[in-house]
Image (cartoon, rainbow, N blue to C red; front, side, top):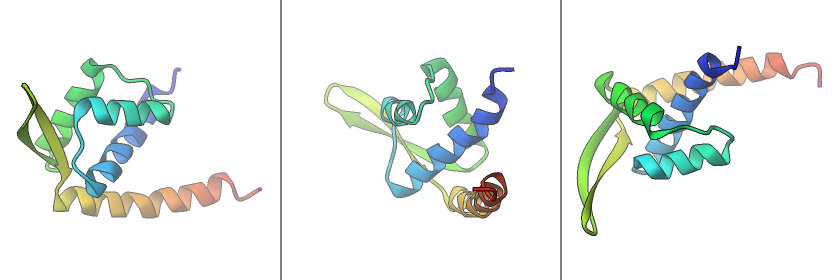
Length: 101
């Protein structure tokens, strides 16, 4: 097992976290995730962003950036609520995982 099924949820939380802070775009969030050790291809990331938007966690607008268009994603109210709920669960899990330290 390579862990992808576990990392998928962590990646989604990272995306929500950054989309709450400021608008994000594909290449930018891909680079941010890479800094955390998640190497994603565009073929993995964009379907994830689209799925999160379809489920109501993100909303997007197309913005002109120089000669090209860029899709910017922001967390919706539902996405913000989901992130807050996930933070509580992650905090509890973190405590259990590292309680022996």
